[in-house]
Length: 500
Image 1 (cartoon, one colour):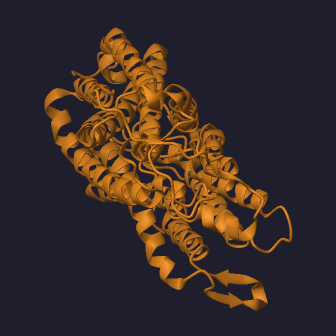
Image 2 (cartoon, helix red, strand yellow):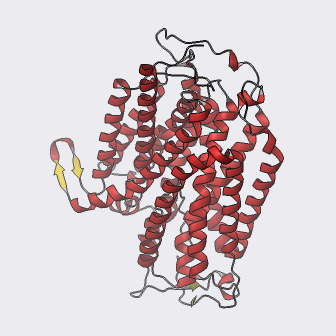
Image 3 (cartoon, helix red, strand yellow):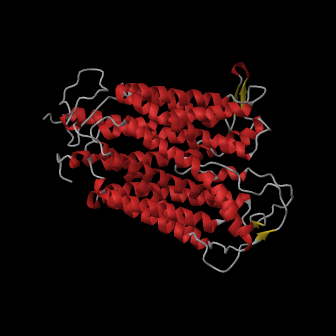
């Protein structure tokens, strides 16, 4: 067996760090404009309504869902640098298009939709990043590397809106550069900054990134992705079939985990406005603080999970995470006797805007802030009488809501990391690009469907139905986990090449 040299070890970890950076930048690319999409859209094109905004937000996830398996397939047969550079270049181009959507004289909203869908398409490289990390780490290193990847992603989602806030100092008018029709203002500066980060990322991929592959023990292997001839053993351990039952199970669990989190994010603003009679501005502000705290909590959880999983194993932690999420949603069920304040004013547009939340900690709350222009001078607050459940469903107390936020913020990151880690271990030494593509696509699908589910069930049937159904879905996934529990083991453990 070829033992890894110090030089090889350093080069391998430098490449993994470049992958962390790529992950961070793809999530910043998503969240950096999310707060300003709606006002920018209204500025360039007065025709679209809130439901079109929902499509613009969803287009990112749709793009990612389509691209992930394609980039994954590409990375299985060619050097990974190719899909990484191409996907990042697509994101850079899409960001530049977004900065120019004000130029055409008509159909501006469709240009914006295209730009966001292409940014999502470029973010399909998440599958390549995860499959590279899975192939370049031993089983011992895997959980830690996957947790770092998810932490980088989470930090990107948290910092995106922070960058956006800094750019608001430029103002709506900003600076216009007539020669190239470029307007540099609070709406375009963030995407141009995102494009700059993308260019830096491409340079780093060329300069530092190298193909590396180690087997489950950490020995060097040859990889189909190598361009040159590298030393190393050819991987005899790749013989044996992947357990497809376990693969499908993890895909389902991952779908459920992202689905319930998307529901939780989407519902925060309408729920707090209905229950606590908050104005739009208050709902955005308070939920903004809550989601930022949840974001920071997630990053801490990612770091703690790494050490915890060495003691208990990934399956037990995934089980625990799902239980915590279940308790989080169970707490949200309305229990008391007190009814929420009723809003009697007849307003035409008081149903929940159909916004679609996306990856992890998307601060979608800021979208609803700019929505539903009220016809009244004083904004009506409370639970609108058009939602018939308001008249007979008890209110959810603030303490319930905050406790639920804390629990979901604890359970979600645990489930996220563990499902990725288990998945990569089950797949074993074979190239994981396509499989990782499917996992990313199932997550994107969940983020498209979650908010649609909420806006329908919550508006028509109320929180009791919405949260009971979510609890039901989580219970089903816990039962599934029990059924496949013994199958969720690493490839090399399954074929008796390593002890668990």
